[in-house]
Image: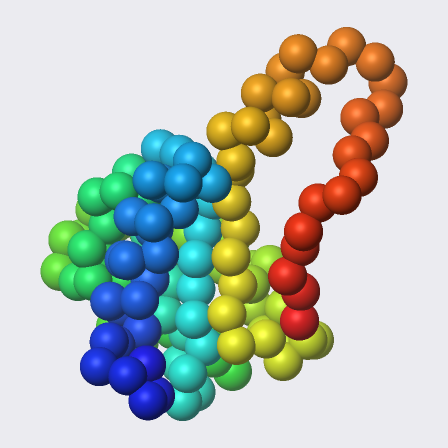
Length: 127
């Protein structure tokens, strides 16, 4: 968005819809945030990912975590992922944080009955 036309709010809403369509996040599970220019843009908690709009996004002070802009809908809540995302921004200097509940990963844990569930050959993007 620094070089593009989309704002962080638009990017988050678009990613939420994309993750939903790819079944990487379903329903209200998971969270997405972007850090830019001393602010953290954060998707709300408890909202269907495919229904999030840019005006539903919270804006927080990146240093203090205080909400500086709330959505017009007073019923929306800051994502429960916010404390974890704040640590990633502080400790890893991340530019964005994504947390998903992939349908396939959740289903695999539901059908597995052993003590330990181990997987290999998964791609993870970190940093």
